[in-house]
Length: 307
Image 1 (cartoon, rainbow, N blue to C red):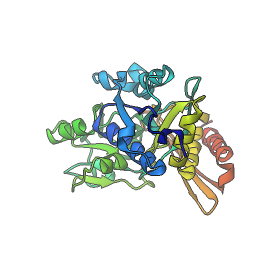
Image 2: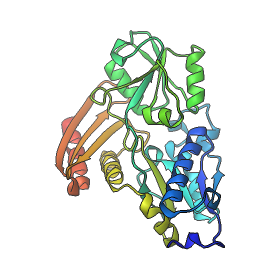
Image 3: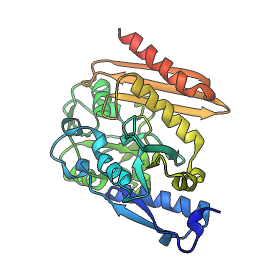
Image 4: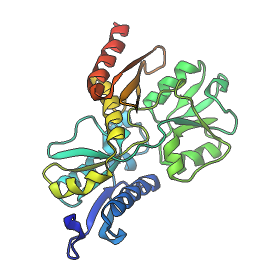
């Protein structure tokens, strides 16, 4: 029996960003822990933490420090003991965590695909030259420019609802978002067109929710253990290792997707020029137990193609 089942145990404080998607993801973590341990929702408190990445919307993430700005303030609160665990979109996390923190819990991964959102075009290849596509992702920008010459990719920041509003107001002809984020928000409709992974490989760890804890907090380690999905965690680790081995981070034009089944793993990795002038894509297969080594080997193959 976990110690948090004691009637006098303190409330478990979950740190999260304040967007509707971030809150939904924090609630998913809470509900998974409630189910795993027979706890009540009242045993948890969602603590909303403002991050610089959310506050500064007038510049690109690469200009102000990268996607790590979505987690650094939350991590400071975690290290200070003002929250017990932190929930993040794993694709936003830097490869390494600050000293004293650990990520060893990844929920079952959702759909990693990207979606094209447009009332005019149902596929990327149907977008004509001169069209304006909005995205804040360096990876998506590079992939779009590689696939469609002559389009204009414009910076497009804000939460999901803000981006969809800008699209409806005609600022751009289309935008791109993660399929799983839309599903978690209950957003559907004829404007949403999933993009085949053969056409656009997603970001490393896209569709995955991770939970961060203090490394020395064994109580939280025990609490989180049943919420972790080992297959999702290993696939995301392989993708992130591939990205790191290329010298990239979560704001680089790097894409990766690992699939694990029947004890095997297949990893597809991609590196692009920021302006889409070239793309190197490679795939490797092997035993899932060698996922980390395979990811590094794949990165070496991609770098070798570029040299």
